[in-house]
Picture 1 (spheres, rainbow, N blue to C red):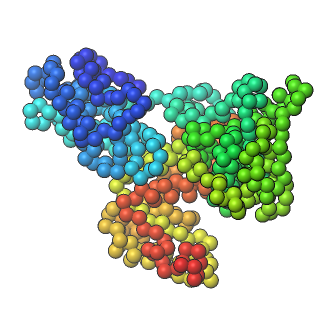
Picture 2: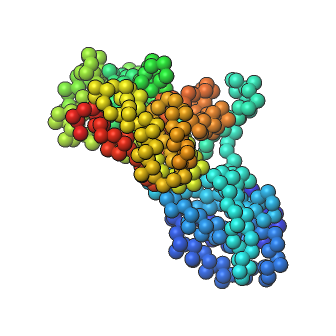
Picture 3: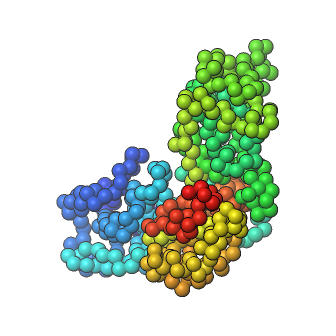
Length: 491
């Protein structure tokens, strides 16, 4: 990315450095921070002595960046701005492209996202800059950060529209190496064999996975982790379970590595076999064949590997059974370690950013529940197009951006709402996971160059997160229908 404008003055560049913090510990840009920047700028002598020198906007002038900072802070109330890059020239003499990193106030994580926009400037009072037009999400293409190109060819490369494979350098979900045999032998591991949880729903998977990870933390051991997930059929159009999904498609592996001691299963098994082949004394292993052997009983075990095996019948072979009973008092599931994939969250951020973070949202649950009149007798009628129009008009202001998170398969089902609101659906943003998208390229890298399907669980994850960011949120149960969420008489 271009860092400065041609012919930029060195004083301006020094002032820009005062504004842009190079440190990793970034403090949010607040009104107080901007006021200090303005004082620093006013105390330094700039080359420009009159408005006649400002006929062409100097994007490296620190006053340009300060103007953008104040504008953004005033416009985007739900955003925390973290840092800015040096503004660069736009496509015209009075334009600058500006890039910044930010986070959403409603997101619990401190992950950073990036936007870059184009601003058109004019000269205001006292030769100050003012913004006369601001472009939309990702409009400042000259300020876009360059990404690492991995290769120029790939399978399916005969598609001229497909983008080259690139890697997001801000995501580090590489598999950590155990290193030497000595390092392997020094470790203490908790290894769970695959159990009855495989191919169950994602909530079941997370409940069981975090039980295992929680036990490893309790035992002060490294958790051996199988990155291969079986996605249950209810998330797939054909209704069939799909094996071979990568954990990193759905969850933030980088954050997990930071929060917990983990080793990938293949890496672990290679280290184990390598040690046993080259040493007469094999790796000490404690095999545990029942979940009734509690974590408390294993606390003092000295074996290098505690190997829990889940060979019984369901539900005895579910991982989460380890954390039941007395163990529940000792094992804390580390929910803080499990974040949604940064790649999926980039899509969430892109959708929200295109609506300038100023939208309302409604969750419309239909599908099987709407068809089941025994458990949900009113749901189908209460979420009909006419009913939605009548109810939402009393909850949402006219012509607001309205994002609809839904499992309704028919795109045109919500057309009647378009006469009252600016309706947005997930399928309006298909290009964000299409074959020219960053998501498509980055997930292909994880999948040995093979395209990855944007599956049903990914859709639910993105829909839910966008819904959560709405200024006004309307839920199906409690807002749109009197039916109970879990069926009749369960409220």
